[in-house]
Image (tube, rainbow, N blue to C red; front, side):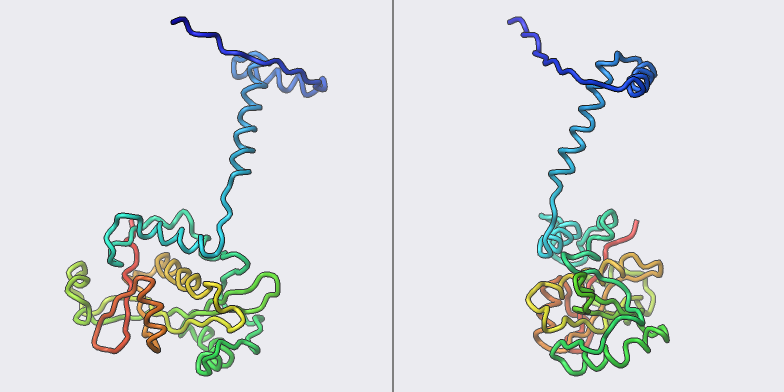
Length: 258
């Protein structure tokens, strides 16, 4: 059956003499007629405009799920050691979660009114966190509400080590036979009462995982000592597993480096 000739449409446009010379010169460089060059250029701009208009803007919950899928694609093993590297092209995605920005604690951040409902965490953040940062005992990161500049949550991260003998056989067999294993320790994590129920704790945790994964110092895993049963459930939900002899000590192996 003979093929039907593709239909074409005709458009007309007015163009200034200077612009016409520019288009003519560009068309000559590509070995095209002016009409072919203009149509090709218009198609390229049209595709780019449509693509930009169809970009997906993720909610806080969707961002967290997106990162989970990057680190643990569907069909992969359920264990945390099976998390795959692949989040590096999206380094900033955990640092911008909806209306919050996560950044290092600075001296001009106002900590005086922070209240998470746990007195020990509130006192530490208000009175001691700044000193620990200055003494390089820990790093502290805060979630700022962009509209008000209020601190909505924080976490601390420090270098540490755990004994290889404390690791489960499943994890230890993947490691060299050194006495200790280098880890990043998640010391404290808290969300202000006014921001509870907005999944900010999960976003702070994923930010800590991402920063530990990007560290230039070798770090095998993220370790945390959960303070109570509720905190333990939170970390277990995010892939941590128990290890060692201490009650509620949890570990999350980080994605392998290339």
